[in-house]
Length: 300
Ligand SMILES: C[S@@+](CC[C@H](N)C(=O)[O-])C[C@H]1O[C@@H](n2cnc3c(N)ncnc32)[C@H](O)[C@@H]1O
View 1 (tube, rainbow, N blue to C red):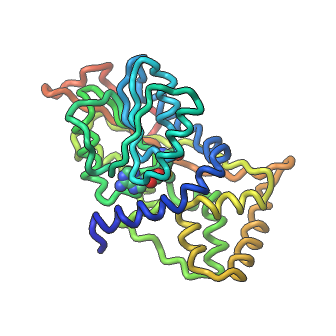
View 2: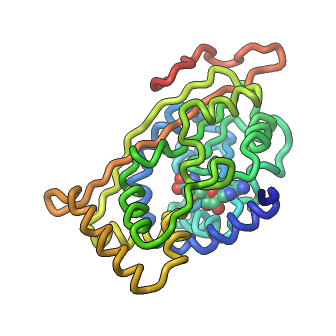
View 3: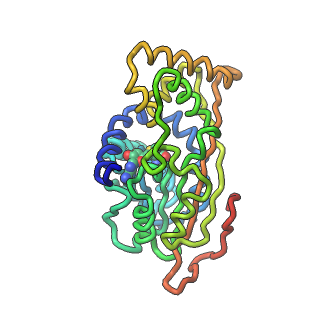
């Protein structure tokens, strides 16, 4: 079992390597993940002067969108990989956003005072943290009473053909070990209730989770393969272990499979994410803001 430090080092190196792919495919990735960011923002109750923390911000979303909604506030984008945050900072400048700061740090060790932020977002970051419980305790610590945490994770691979197709093709040529349920990987938090339990253990209340459909849209099956093979963490790691002829065969297999999703000159491959929201109570145990939120598995 690798130590937390070893996990952080491996993740930092992996995302440094993936950053060029995320930069190159940003418009396609952001279109795909946009509905998840929008669903999270809806739950975060963003005020004009909102103090916000975006964890595992990567190339900047949903933090950049939140900064646009709170021009009198402040959004701190944090990530373990400086290469990803450099892209986010460049995007913030290009969009003329002056209320953005960046800070390289790990989610489980935050360099912020207690009760600093009105809201925290974690879009597709949880599954990579060395200690998810410790990270959630950190989020609860730096949230103000009444502040909300909203995160998103992927549900099981069977509901996410946009990655499952590529992984099936890779498995025709390489032994793809089943992901370690306790180690970082994109489907680590797929079980319903997994992240909700972390929130509740950290003392958050009115925890609710719900699923959001996504669609990966590319111009062609070839573009689908180029994009997946250059930015999806599981695929890039597995492809790194095969030689060039095997890569070519995998590419041909994935392109043939994804043709089933081709329609009207586009390829549209579906997927499903899960969002999880929770609120920090005040010292008296009351919810200081609007209170009651549903605790079932439907959209809050
Ligand atoms: C899938 S990307 C998500 C980026 C962005 N939030 C989005 O949705 O577009 C995952 C990010 O998690 C970051 N990450 C991995 N381990 C981390 C850790 N321990 N603390 C903070 N960020 C971490 C990676 O560097 C990467 O940028």
